Picture 1 (tube, rainbow, N blue to C red):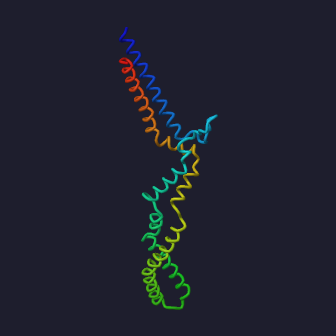
Picture 2 (tube, helix red, strand yellow; picture 1 turned 90 degrees about the vertical axis):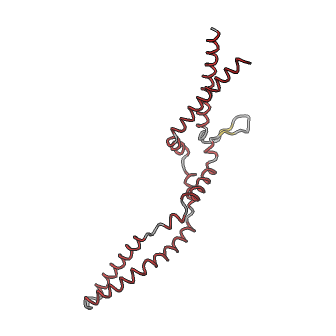
Picture 3 (cartoon, rainbow, N blue to C red; picture 1 turned 180 degrees about the horizontal axis):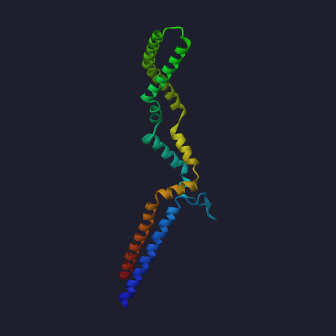
Length: 203
């Protein structure tokens, strides 16, 4: 009977510890987002607010800085806008237009001469269009980089997110990890309860 009482006592403390650990972690996870707005505790100057809503501006700024520095800068975006295939396509379009204009305006010229003119102009276009596009592209990119602030765009977008939607997305993405944290709280609390029960026997 004595041994059974000891066992039940330790088991009871382990269960209580497990419940406390589990509930503590569940509440801690909830308090990452809730309450969405600050709640003032009566008769005190203490305000309670979810960690992420409270520090959203700081989080948004840090995320934006990291994305720009490590993942995506203005240079990364604009430097890949015009590819060699695009230059060839533009040159082909110009050649086609020029050829049509010559055919319409130079109907009095022999076809052999028209073909030579077309070939000559086509060679010039093929050689110069790429350089012209590079020059224009460089100017455009420099102006665009001055006007477009990727960091601010990302920061503003995060700050514009509805906090409830942000919570929903976060929970959906990290559902398994959050559940592991809750279970870990249960296991640690259970283990601590057993240890406390054993300690209580020798005190």
